[in-house]
Length: 290
Image (cartoon, rainbow, N blue to C red; front, side, top):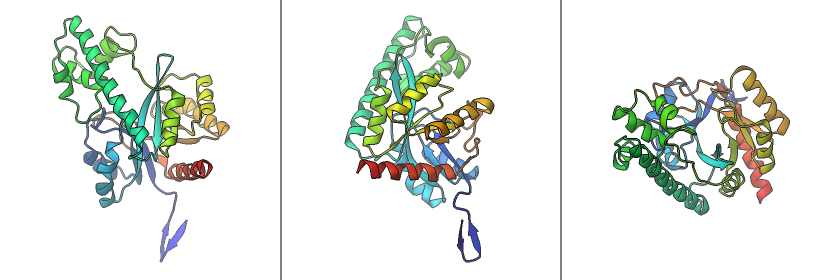
C-alpha cells in the first residue's frame, strides 16, 4: 500500500481478467468494444488472449490507456498432444519476435487447410456451405470451427451454435478433422523464446489428467489457470493446490467470447495481485535467461 497525499492506494486492489477473446479470433466483439465492456465491469487489468495471434495488443494499447485500463499482451496457442488439444496461454510475448510470427503465420495457413477439409466433409453430407461463406464471418486472419458453426446456424442447417459441435464439428463427430500443430514442449519454448510466460489454460475443461499437468510442469509451464468458470468448488481448489505444490502462478479469467454468453468479463473476481505475481515471475525468468 502506498500513500499519495491523503489518498491511500492499494497496489493489489481491484480485479483482473487475463483470458478473453475478440472477433480477431472466435469472439464476437471488436477490441474496442471489449475494452469498453471491461471498463464498465470495473476491471483494473485485462489480457486479450485471441487464438494464435497477437494482433489485439497494438490495437488495444491507446484506447485502453485512454480509459484507464491496464492491458497485458496475451495469446492462446493450441498445442497438440496425442490427438488432444492443449491450450497454452502466453503472456508478455514480444509481438515483433520473428520466430513466433513465423509460427503464427503457419498456424493461420493450417487453420485454412483444416477449415476447407471440414467444409468438404460437410458438403459430402449434403450441407451446401462454402469456404467463402464461412470466411465472411471471420473478422481477423484466424479462421476456426466457430466460424463454420456460425455458417451452419445462419444457413439453418442447425438450430443453435452448440448443436454444430455436438452433431458435426466436435471431436469424433462426422465432420471432425484433427488439428495439426506444435506439441506442448515446442509451444512452451516458443513462448519463452519470445520473452513470454507460458500458462496452462483451463486444464479441467480440456480434460487433462493430473499426470499430464505434472508433465507440463516438467516441460516448463510456469502458471496454471485456477480462476476459471469450468473449475469451481472442489475442482477449483484442486488446481489451486496443484499451483501451490508445483510453484506455479495461479491465473485465470472468464474465457469471454460473446456479450450474451454466460460468463462476462471479471466474473471470476481474480485479484490484481495475480498480475503482480505474473510480472515478478517474468522478471525472474528474464534474469535466468540472461
